[in-house]
Image 1 (tube, rainbow over the protein chains, first blue to last red):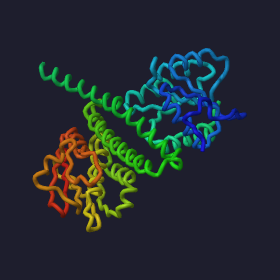
Image 2: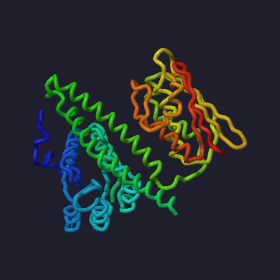
Image 3: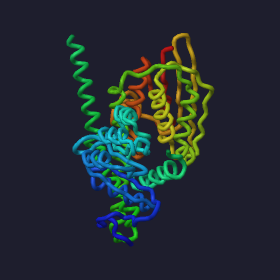
Image 4: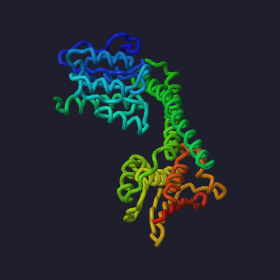
Length: 151
Length: 231
């Protein structure tokens, strides 16, 4: 049985044409749960994580090409907010149309409205149980990767 | 002028409480819950036998707390959200949504729920949904162990009011508690899982519609909840 929680690097070996997921999450445990859930769900992907709003914004802004097929953003980041990141994503010519999903612990209507106002494709609540997170990532993959047509 | 100040003060306090519950309580609890359930999902086979029931207990407790905090948040938000939007609401749609959301409970308990065609009323959709959802769920949850549960919903219309009744044949409520059951955290039949906030949510929602809710009951025979809404 693998020892996932001690694994330092990316769980997923580099696979050609694997979907590239960019996760913006400053809580290392939430990041780990997300990674574990993808693994548990059997989703083949190339996962990168930005652990702050500033690193996410500068990563997006300094790129010369599209670097992610799906972007997942947490709202509460230590040095800024998910809204700053959403803004950076939507003003970047390479990422303007990339499916960007907010994954947040907040159920406040203001947060939901603002997320859509900043161009999020969807707002998702962080589930309180691991199996629900596994289910969630499967749904994300089924819809945004398998089903939806992207430009 | 003083009233306005007091009102704003109380409103701000509630907003703080909403933030505190949502952020300072629910976030860490979510961390606990996800961590424990990840342990259960990923490491179960490697856990020593003695640890497994401890983990199960911890998960059950954190689920209980999560439910309570969610209900508490709902209750607080009834007062902090922007003023409710009153529109035409078809109670039949509410009813079928409620039954759909309770379908697992309905299947498990084998409860028979009867109701007529309901009216279209003017109100806030979400609040009316909360009201029905809590009352029907309670009627099922507080069933009597010795008999098949029955829930009957009926309504009357007068010139000035809609009168809705939700009747059950469950455990009943002691006479001395018929008013206090609408207080937050008030619980009577503690063997039944619940947060004690459901009925306070109902009362708050009904009050926002300038209505009233009253409980009548015979202990061990059942209860009737009467919701009156002005037309």
